[in-house]
Length: 80
Image (cartoon, rainbow, N blue to C red; front, side):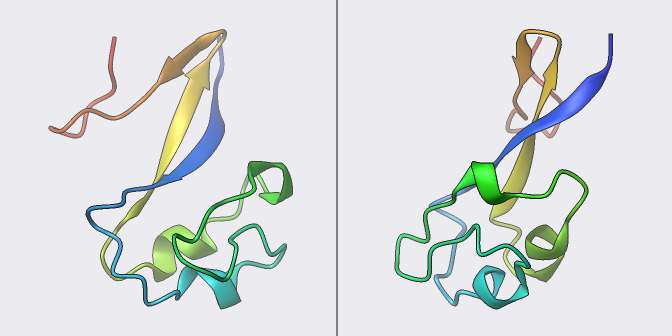
C-alpha cells in the first residue's frame, strides 16, 4: 500500500506569523491574513516551498496510507 501526502498543517504554537509561506507558494494556497489558513485543494503534491521557507518549521505534512492518516507524534514518528 502506497503512502501519499494527504495535507499540510500549520502548527499554531510554532508559527511566528511572519508570512514567509505566502509569497513562495506558487498556487496561493496560503491565505495572506493571520491565522494564515491553508486551502489544501490548491496545494501541489510535490511542492515543498512553504515547508522549506518556514524558519520556525511550523508547517508539516500529514501522510495517508490507504484509508489511514499518519500524523506525526511529538517524538517525530508517525502514529500507528
